[in-house]
Amino acid sequence: MRINTSIINNQVIVDLSGSMYVEGAEILREKLIKHVESGEKHFLIKMDKVDYIDSSGLGVLVSIHKRTRQCNGSLVISGTTGFVKELFELTRLDKVFDMQ
Image (cartoon, rainbow, N blue to C red; front, top):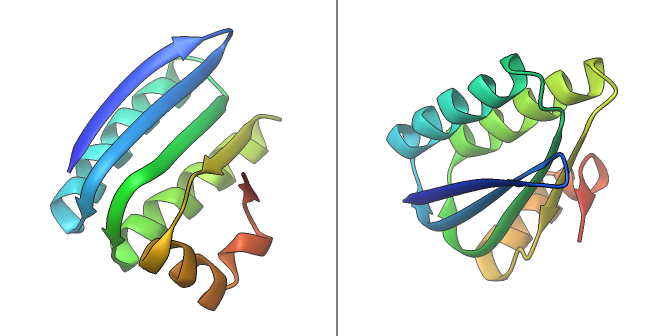
């Protein structure tokens, strides 16, 4: 899993690629929490190059979503396809997240 982050117009852009398993999810959690703790509260998670995500990856996204909501921020997930999109729909997380 590759994780590239940048900040554009007060929004943290997180470009993910590959498969997200436990190890990658923990690295993502650490990076996102650092941004939240430094005052960033708007996130765009680009998942168009993610071909697999497990429950730990979904847990990280839910956790960060909750933290951003607590500080009047936002978390948008964009570009889900294939298995990843089906998983969001199956778990009904597509109703929880702002999906683009």
